Length: 306
Image (cartoon, rainbow, N blue to C red):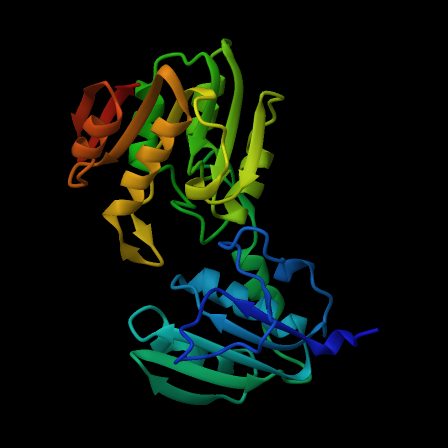
């Protein structure tokens, strides 16, 4: 039987030329469907962890604290971040946990290597600060690191207010913590709603926020969700346009094509997007009728029919 301390972990996808994880390392990022949960590991379970640090301070300290807690005493933590996305603060944050830090710089990243101290300091506070919590401004459960975690995104709020009553079987692509889903499920003629998100934390929050037997949840990538073509009556979405922190306009366009593929003939897509995003062309390519419904406050809403 393999000793627990021989378990190696990786969080995210650190560039190989910056910090390479050991072969066979177990993935623990909440943005990788099917990955393990650092939260579930026993103390001392890991021999090493290679971590691409999240850019948000609270989220980053939470992940690092969980990683240090899961490492065996003397276990190795290698953490990297772009200099302009938290990298310049890594050394100071690790020292606050009681770590002796070896710091390097490569490929616009800061890389810090530490050994877990016998008694790290401040881990519980960092874990509590980054843990799931109920936020009144969201009117639900959420967690630092989730999209628009501490407020309702204005685009989602606008679409929720604009939606007519939905009916039949539908899906919410990139559901977040369930803001749009709540609006959809207010319609009695909705038979079922599949909530899909790439972020495990969002799906876990949405499960807590939506207690409706018509709702089901999938921690997966919309682009490979495996929904049967032509099986849905409607799709709602506020599609992401960042991938790994970089703007990617093609990501939303792919969501639109995926929606068209999953909708039955005459099925409907309701979409909200930032005004500058170039979605009109792809909408016209894959839908028979595209109707602009709202254009205000930097957002635009479309109804598109197959």
